[in-house]
Image (cartoon, rainbow, N blue to C red):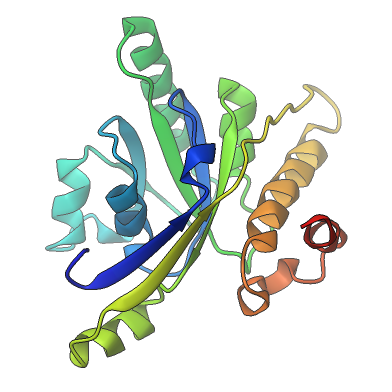
Length: 208
């Protein structure tokens, strides 16, 4: 990563040392690599899209970090349950606390994995905004032997509480929107996607 990219990090001090869920926007294949490069921890639970399972490079990396293979195109509750099992096991063993990183496209509004895990685990969510990891841009820079400029901005932790029973799914979506608006408010306008005009995004931007 140091050879192919210059990574600028802002707000890393907001990231606590205990159990967290780091939620970032998804731009390209270097998203996870960039985050791993700046976070000095080995206790990460990483979800990787299952389409990379047999990839010669990304499949090997996934196996090396004992990744959980995730179906990104539907609610993969089996993968989410496996993440919760690993979290609880590490906590019960008294071992190092683990963090979990989940990426989500800023263009989509319906993926609620982060809110689901936060409500089940009780761990805080750390919003993370990425720019500069788009595949096309990275490849173009590599062809010209030029480093990609990647910026990572870390936000303050959020506590997510979802009531049980009636209204749970609506509350889950509201929590997801809040997480995504927090991320969108840390991104340049052109990166905010469907959350650019969200009232909560505008409110957060006015607070800054």
